[in-house]
Amino acid sequence: MAISIDRISKSYGEHKDVHALREISLSVHTGELFGLIGPDGAGKTTLFRILTTLVLPDRGSATVEGKDVRDDFRDIRTMVGYMPGRFSLYQDLSVEENLRFFATIFHTTIEENYELIKDIYVQIEPFKKRRAGDLSGGMKQKLALCCALIHRPKVLFLDEPTTGVDVVSRKEFWAMLQQLKKQGMTIFVSTPYMDEATLCDRIALIQKGSIMSVDTPENLLNKYQGDLWGIRTEHMYKALQDLNNFPSVTECYTFGAMHHAQVSGLQMPAELHNYLDRKYHKNIRVEKIKPTIEDCFMQLMQADEREPVPNE
Image 1 (tube, one colour):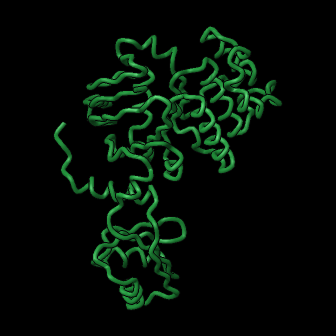
Image 2: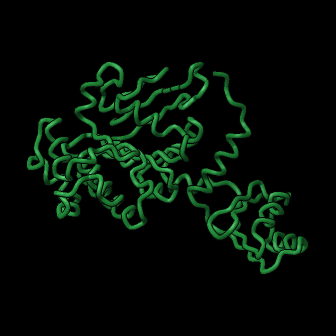
Image 3: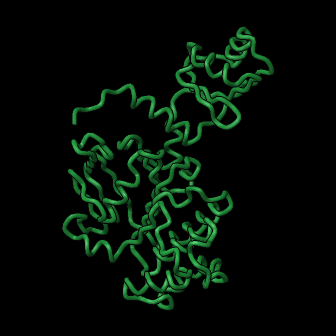
């Protein structure tokens, strides 16, 4: 097992009243591409900082490659690569200088591990003399990944690596991760983008410091309960209010250009159509759709909100 987490909790604040993590337990297999999926403030960065030995947990235990995050922090730091959410390389150093600096820290060289970063580095090599602070977002991302890989880590931690990056760069980045996975590297990546969940072997959905589900993306989608309907009208804001007042709709929210309505006990889409027609909506379109990971997240969050929060 590459990563094992057992009931990790972490709180902040003078009175420890800000609960970043609540009894987190999960495991990541060796060679797995594992995704931690959740919105900003869900606890993703706190968990990553604990696993990379930058923060101590209040309670619970965790190991990385069999090493304890409390007792074996020096060993862990030599065997993991960490790419934090914010660009943290030296902005005044060039691309090449940053990479050589991090190689030196880990007592290696660019040349020794060049084959590992080659496919990524060739994309930024034409700019190797340019200062890191002058790179585009996508190029900064590639440089940070090279620096995290230069010592050939056993486990790679990537904290929201595609946040603020254009769609093309996001696609390229995930293609790089798939290549690294083929080389046997364990990758633990966090992201607020639900669509990226389907690119992982397994995912954990996290909200308010608690894990709501751990499964493969396919299994999670298959567990979706009830029917999901996509709805459009000329007056979308009013439609959202009206749909949330319809008895068969358990939850309705905006998703792109349409509303997604979680429905139970509805026999025919005509019932929804006729209801909206009675509410004076025009150009009504109602269609049954397949749920996405985000729909599953919304359903799990709704169920979680109905359950009482345990005493701390």
